[in-house]
Amino acid sequence: MTQRIHSCVYGLMLSAPTWAAVLVCCALPAGWMLANAAMHPRQLLAAVSTYRLELLGRTLLYGTGAALAAVMLAVPAALAIVRHRGAGVLVWFVPLTLIYPPIAYTYGWSHVFMLAGLHPSPGGAWDVLRCVWTLGAWLWPLPAMGLGFALQRLDAETLQQAVLDGALWRITGRLAAGPLAACFAATMVLASQEYTVYEPSGISVVATEVRTAFDTGVSAAAATDRRLGMPQADRCAAAATAGMPLAIVTAVLAVAALRGMRGTCGGSGGDAGRVMQPGMWATALSWIVLSVTLVLPTAAMIACLNGAGEVITFLRGAAGHVAGSLLHAAAAGACAAVAGLGAMIRKSGAALLISLAAFMAGGQMLAIADIHLYNRRAILGMPAGWIYAGLPMAVMAYLGRFLWLTLLAAQASWSREMTELREMAAIDGAGPLRTATLVVLPLFWPLLCGTAMLVAILSLTEVPATAILVPLNPPVMTNLLLTWVHQLKDGPMLAGSLVLLTITALAAGAAVLLMRVAVRQMAAPAIRAG
Image 1: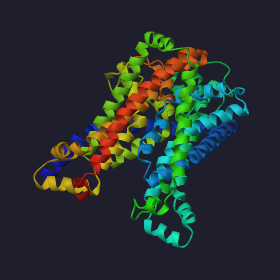
Image 2 (image 1 turned 45 degrees about the vertical axis):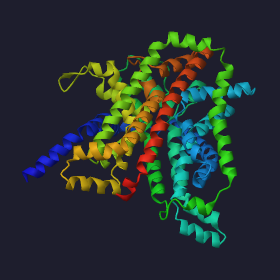
Image 3 (image 1 turned 120 degrees about the horizontal axis):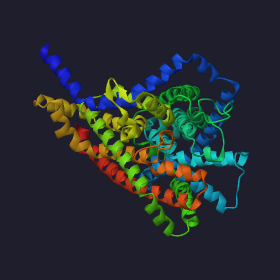
Image 4 (image 1 turned 135 degrees about the vertical axis):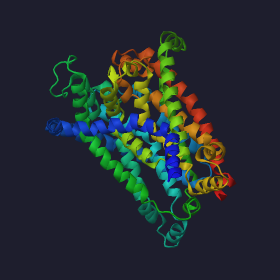
């Protein structure tokens, strides 16, 4: 009995970094959101007013349009991924659009339309279509990768029988309906939470309403001035309540997405491409889509830039913001790596679920919850002013948003084959820590480092949470670029967007290299054979 208690305590100590990050950055903010809804029922009822319902409907309509555009762009790439041949390089390039800084991506497409002679009226129907297209072009890698890998897992024997019956694509469509619906729901969720594309044009969606409620304490329909004197706790509560209807819809869509992916047919996965045999047109069309969505906005910004001098001027004037962005991103990535390492030592499935729930809440809601919880002079009798005054506040928001990535990578180290390796090491007398460091980590360190790098990249480009956490110390590029968008400073905005894009591209290149090493490591005979 004593040995069992000692083993449990030892296991909890090893997983302490993981659970500390999950509790502080994910569980407590999510718990405060639920508690706020329960403690302010009148405000919650006000959130279902006619104005708020119209706002929610508009947000979901725009999100649906963006998801439709993303899925249509994604179909060729999904088929190319199934085909394997000729798509090996494509698999590594498709996700790059998804990590394109959204503020720079929006600005890039604005200049594409400007160079094409299209000048939609701000807030008009054509401007809404521009926003919907921008979101769809940004998010299309999500359904492309999700649907492509789901198609790879289809039962090859079922597909072969469908070929004999002359109903290959009808059967494939039926089998892929669940994963397709899941990808659509996930894309719709992310599109509905983003407000970078809408805010400069004055288009009202739930995300802009949350920002208004946080700034003023009232909705945009009732706000006549910025009530800066309103207590911060009340403004946080009002903003969280304003975003609660969308959070409920997000939860429903998340459950639908999980059920859809669970419905993927299993079997002799990996042979579906041999049976389906999509033509080279799928790969060619995928590269065209990738060129349009990735290269075109970048080329438009470069074409509108007045020489390299603007970039040099930006770097001289905003060096502190660049360094601050890198510091925040590096801190978030390092903390995510430590938490992921803890999850490799001791399995933490519940921690992954909690972090996914926090991710679904959205960056704005997490940042608002963090401000309410941690912007205090003291917490439990200990000084806490340093939390909001320095790195921790932003890092906690970023971890709440993206910690699930490293925890998901850690789950891969608990596969059936790896569990057998762990059991063999335990028979030889190795404890959990020794097994993780000598058996698991040598195989999975590229995956852990690659996902930690991805957390850093996404933290670098995160807008909703960063815009709420103003001012940040040290300052970051994102808030500076948001200011320049409203001040119509085109030259500095172009230079800053390209600098942010360059940093992101370099980090993404390192992440891709790590992921390629991870794929080779995970395909090693030792892992496959157990």
